[in-house]
Length: 451
Image (cartoon, rainbow, N blue to C red):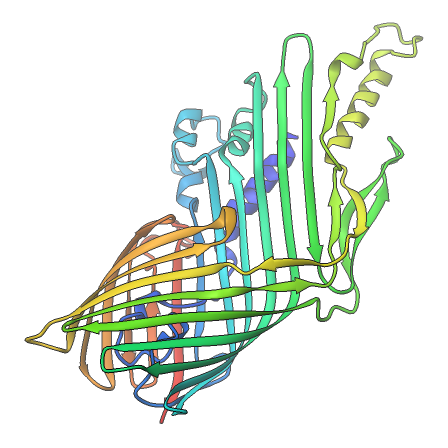
């Protein structure tokens, strides 16, 4: 068990920074004049000109978020890099950087097509995007067991989760100026589902007493993907059939859905207040493949009586084999098959912004933006303060500081004509291999044609 937990932790914390993901938006551009994709963060925003984005190249991104980075689990011992599980790192020191719940998330958006134009008494946008939301949560007790082994009397690892979905969206947006102060906007999105998975390890509890050990487990995985089936095998020792993997043949459309973005912006003298609620909608997935322990599974060592006499049925070797076989049933998930359709809401985002433009120098403004992503256990929020400068129509830049669920940092954006470069979370410290030590970083670049 300890070896399995170590493997999972190493895979999660060490491999995560190597996984590139395209971030949905660059929030450094929310208040930046001339940034063409402001409408994706608030559909009430419009551009002075039409634009056409080069497929994929129009808005390329790499980003990742996390509450636990390499710097929290790696240590320098005698000039060598090692993990928190090194015996020379005390438990108190190792656990000081690890929270009760450690969240990691990626919001992915690959832009296939995007353009905007004036018309219909407003500004209109059309976009086709591939999107995915990824997240997993590791309890702090999970790390403690890996560090300490079984030195304590009890461990309760509960509410360990993983979520992922992928879909394509066709987005049709319109921004309309109601009067000189108020503008509103909305985007309708037609969704085509590709895959969805939710894994919930509800609990793994170990109670290590002097007379007996007790272990319990409860877990469930729900997956929706056309052509996906759970692979199963029979445990030769127990005779139980259990899930040991997944197989996908002829993948395709797995569901359909619809969503809306709603936004408004109001100008009051030198102030502009804005609010937007994004991704209000759902996808109805066509199948729900379930693998589960089907309740709580329990393992209790009081059932085993070891006998030193090799001729007895409960001799030490045979009883140890029986104990090991029964312990393996804690990890067995049964294939419950297709449980029918299910509807899943999207992870909605709320943006609240306020911008103040200097009356004596209109090319300079200051903004405050609060962003909250509602995604159940993977909900996160961040607050950003920015200074924005637009000395010419073809050139603008902004710098900002951010704090929130995933810590503090700073970012910036520079725009030159149809080109832009931005980082919502700048990288300040990397390993020798060039991997960010912090779990938060982003990079955005794009080339577009304005007309």
